[in-house]
Image (cartoon, rainbow, N blue to C red; front, top):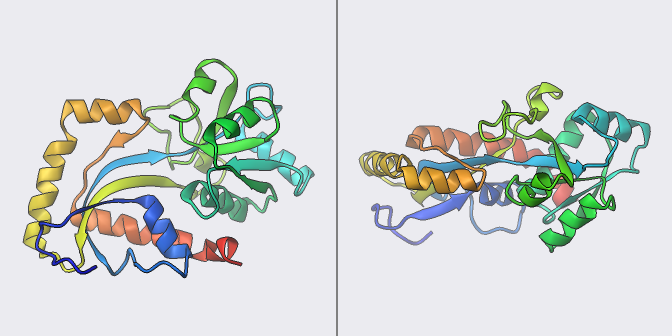
Length: 239
């Protein structure tokens, strides 16, 4: 990063960038070394979706079926190596199940393949599956947040069946590494004011996201914890 850390160059950075930094040896940036973290803006989990007619009513049902038929069940995701893909690979590593990933470029096709049963499951966002859920064509088996997500409180978290599991992605404000603490704190305070705006909160809520500001230290800790979680899965993306 060639820009000076003076508070005039800011980035909107995603949890997906952190996943790539942790797992892709070819990327030219490091989320641990190249950025100063200011504040999160929004947090959002994912969910595991199945067809309404699928025999799995709970995550326990799905895990049991996968154990009975190792390698026979599959799941769709939006791209190899992204957060969605690795969220399920993390679940596999924690449970020992073998289910086959199927990457899709077309989200509409992925959703349709879940509905008709061509896919056993899919990892995605509530926003992407909103229509399928509303029409009764799909069900959410579980949400990847550690606790029940306030915007979808009826969906059980994975952690109720797989203790310690959590995948919550984020969008946040960052700057080039070396940003002075006083500038970072002032920018964080400004972000907190912006995130509290009712219109912004409403727009994010409509997307299934939670508006959530943080201190620079809290954001930095989240980035490091997520990086450490994803790093061991690099061998899955680049065996």
